[in-house]
Image 1 (cartoon, rainbow, N blue to C red):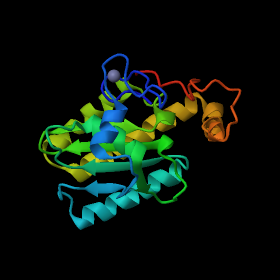
Image 2: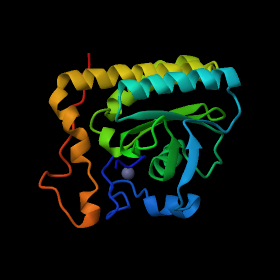
Image 3: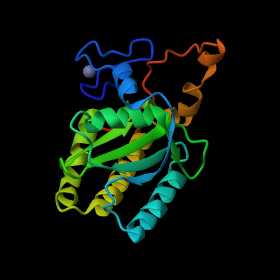
Image 4: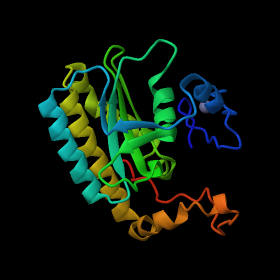
Length: 213
Ligand SMILES: [Zn+2]
């Protein structure tokens, strides 16, 4: 996975970022190593109405139908000073059992929009299979487009726009490398857990990032 602070590669074998010192182990020490169950829309700040939440659930269902490998989720919460949004996002993508439309969806293909309404910050956290598809520069551009609704406190609008923007980016990526997208699930197997090792190099990007317009 990419380091949530500087986007360098960190792995289970090397959980401390060699570039910035971020420690996945320290985050686990702070938030625990257990899996947590959470809804795709987790509104810990209680800013969304029931009507908005229900509408967003249908938007997320549509997204999952369009991209059968992927899911999107959103977390809204005011974090304590000791925790950053990217840190919590990193932990959630590693320890969150998201209540997706189909239970089989893996966090490797998850995209979580993290929002702190008090700090007025937002970030995207990606499962590692998507890190080469939605690169840092793309995510920064998408976040800029969400700044309008986020600054007005229109969180439901921001989440719905985020889904639509990610949808477009994934479509662009799929069009540029359609065959590689089809191969994506087989290259993210769990065979190594069984002592079997794939012949394909693990670091091989699944897709090329869409070119900037
Ligand atoms: Zn780092």
